[in-house]
Image (cartoon, rainbow, N blue to C red; front, side, top):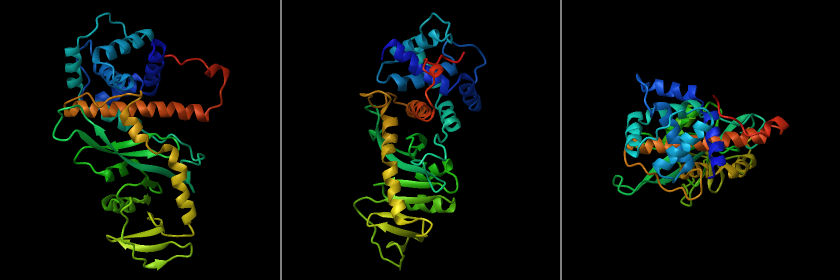
Length: 331
């Protein structure tokens, strides 16, 4: 990136995650500092975001570009550049809690009810996606981390993600509301998620892997689909490899449900794109500690969301002369 694109990228992050929002996330985790530091908690949150924005740049280069951009925007007045060791220590002091809090506080659907690729019959469309993320060499027994995410159809915004061993895909339901329709393509049908979704008023339209369920039709329906039971859950088969929890063929015609996957095609792979970073050639995560890994994942997700939000705004807002100027940093 050039200096000007650095400034534009950092400006986007500061506009999407202004200082007061970052400070609130820090305070919610008890990380508010009692004394002034060169590497404040607020600066370190922006540093983690800058790591994702400028990856795979090394630590000191990331800090140089970050402070240069903040200085240009009037948000950094220090002349001293911190050492690599002090940056490591400041990241450890920060922990991953503030990044998690910032992620949970700011990830919201971007589409309006009028966006056809994001809604169907007044119901929001979200995708369930999974990705195996490469870790730094020598981290743990497995070199990859399994991440499940919730992606908004149409905008490609990642609204939630889980990766801890104690959290399953059903945890993603915390970011849904009754009436949401979850789409999945090629993932194993998750009985735990399906049951929890049904209890939450959330429906599934699930395209299965090559290995299909042993369908035993129990009740043919007028549109050619049929009902069957699977692990105590009623499902409807609308194609040889597609099942749904929407059981009424009149309220949810099979042809319409199959078309939903076509609508979502442009958003498919968004979780992978977010985790692989903002720039082509972004490498695996650099961190070796659990907190550091969590920080980096949140950083990449937050940067991706900021970019998707900017794209959605540009798509939905008419171009005016006064909007053509590069936005300034919030002061």
